[in-house]
Image 1 (cartoon, protein in one colour):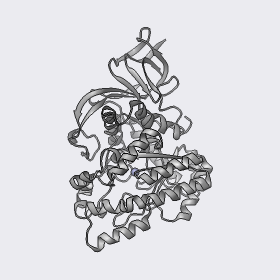
Image 2 (image 1 turned 90 degrees about the horizontal axis):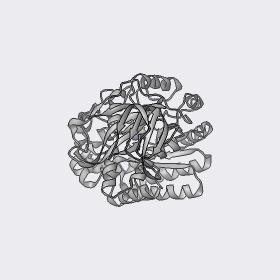
Image 3 (image 1 turned 180 degrees about the vertical axis):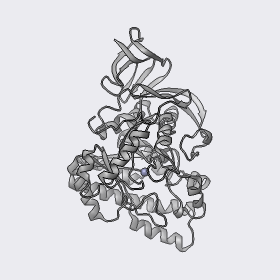
Image 4 (image 1 turned 45 degrees about the horizontal axis):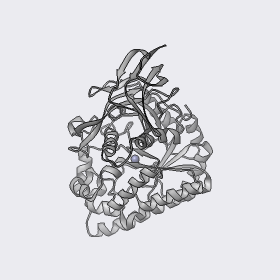
Length: 457
Ligand SMILES: [Zn+2]
C-alpha cells in the first residue's frame, strides 16, 4: 500500500531496546513497523532518518498552560508551540486556572479552548470537587488533581478551590475518584508544618530565596514526607489510584517503593527541575528563577537511582511559566513570588544530554517520557512506536551539541532557567499523528490540530 508517511533509515527506540526499522503511517496511525532497509515502503512523503533516533512523542502529564485566566504568562498556543519544539505530543493541563477547573461546566469550557487552540493532543485534570467527579470523568478526563497547598502571602499559583488542608476533605476526594476509576494526582505538602517553619524566618525578617528554599527542605523534607505518608495511607484505604507529583526526597522514594511492594496503586513522577536545577548553587545564583524548590544533593542522587530502578515511573515537566516581574519580587520576598519554572521545551533535550552523560539509558528515557505516562493514565493510543498506535514520533539527533538560550524560548515569558546551558542531543522534528508539527527549527503545527485523548482511547 502507499502510506501517507514513511520514516525510513532510523533507529527506533522503545523501553525494551532499539532496532533499525522503518515506519509506515496512514490516517495518523502507525500501520507497519518493518525491520530492514525500508525497501518497499511506498509513501506520499518519505522522511529520511538515517543516522538518527526515532522516539515516541512525550506524554507530559503535568503542564500549566495558564489559559484561561493567566494568559499574560502563557496561553494554549504558546504553550503547545513550546511542547512541539520540545518533543511533547500530548499534554495534561492542570486545574489552577481562572476560573479554576472545579465543575464539569468549567471543564468543558477548558476543553473547548484546547480544541480551538492546542497544537498537540491533550487531556485536562480538574479538581475532584464533590458531586462533580462522575460527570467530569464522563467528559473524558484521565485524572484529577489537587494540591495539599493553600498559599500564604499570595493568591497564586494555588487559587481557591484547587488547594486543601483538611484531611477529611482529602479522604472524600480519594473515595470519589476511586469510584470513577481514574487516577488521583496530588501535590504532597503539609501546610501546618510549612507555616511553623516559615514563621522562624519571618520573625528574623528573612524572606529571601534562600530562606524559602530552606523552609521547604526543612528537617530533610518533613513537609513532603508527612504528606506523602498521608496520601499513601489514603490510597491504601480506598484503593484509589494515586499519582504523586514532585517526588524529591529519599524518604518519599522509600515510602513509594514500600507501598508498591504492598500492592498500593501508586505512581510517582519527578520533574526536570529536580534533576537539572535546584542545586544550592542554583538557588544562590538564580534565586526565584529556579524555585519552587531546592533539591539537596543527597536527595538528587536518590532520585536518579529511583529513575533508573523504576521506583519513579515517569518524568513530567511541571511546566510553570511566570513573567520576570512575577519572579523578580522574589529577590526581596520569595513568599510573594510565583513559584515554578518553565520546562516543556527543554526537558527531552536535557534527558538526552543525561543519556550522553551516562546517567540514564535511552530506553529508560523512552519509558519515563512516553510509555509509562500513556500506560499509567490509560491512554491506549499513545506512547509506543507499534502498529495501531498514533504516529506521534520524534526524529532525534543524539550527537548534536547546542546551547539553550532565552532568545529561542517559545513560551510567552521569553526566559528559561537553563539559559546558557550546553547540551548534547536535540529534537529535530516532531510529528503528531503523522503530521509534522516541528522541524527545521520552526513550529509547523497549527492551533486546533490537537485532539482530546481520552482514557482507553
Ligand atoms: Zn505543577
